[in-house]
Image 1 (cartoon, rainbow, N blue to C red):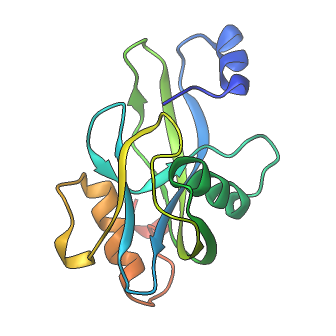
Image 2: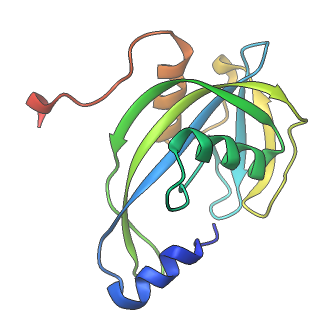
Length: 159
């Protein structure tokens, strides 16, 4: 995944130290209830679509932009599925980031699913009960989005 310019600029003074960042992810459903997935170019695994908001960009705007940039699918955010701070990630160059992910359930409203940038090897629609092998991160979000329950977050008393 390409590193946004604003993060490269931060790294010039921060070095490899922990950098907390916002993140957005999308569970995009079509009219048949299928979920949009991309097979990532960085690790070859299927996952939900997501990314980093630009400075000043609203999360809902960022998730719509990320979905279109990666898949050419137009979508509308319907609700927040969950908010979660993820475990720190150490990249091959030594950079450490920790993302606070805001996951949106979105409805597809146009476009044809296709690889639309260099972040994906493939994109496609999958029935929720016929998902390819994926990390628990993605599966949890898909399951949360599949029903109309409340937004999930870890209650303070569980920490």
